[in-house]
Image (cartoon, rainbow, N blue to C red):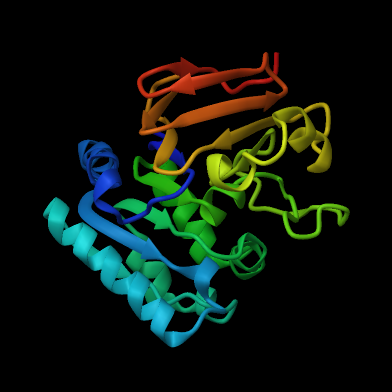
Length: 241
């Protein structure tokens, strides 16, 4: 029983995304998981203590608003991803949420670690797994270097090997044509490239073959499938034609 999988453009822990996050927890609970919101701040692991404290409190407030328990996992380094207490905390949580920051650091910390193995196992047994911004990007086989577009991509966690995600699409890529974005990001022909706007997500729930768009803005299909823009409530199958 594979759980729900969500790719979020931005807005983790904000009121605008609260109902969506609540639905992901409900999905996990329906599959027998504990009503627990697991915060995984690894992508922000190189930020200041003040910023990490901000993200922690924001996530705790979001969980309180939804009415569930929050567990904050301070996994900032690879050593942290091998700690047994962090592995144990993953088990049976209804929602595992990787928040934003540096996707390359996130991948470097979690790849081939007991924590990531526990997360995959929990998801495969019914928990929801969500990634926002960097957390969405890292689920692909490769992560583009937005700041150094001529540099080759780095290896991701490979949960969605054929899908690449551009988060914050309406904020950071509105200044260039969509046709240019897919060229600049060096996306191979056998991949699907999507842009996910801020305060918007795309989710595949247990038993569904299609992904559902949720949120205030749009999801942009840029490569690998017919070019299109999808709005809240619309569905798409993210499989190579």
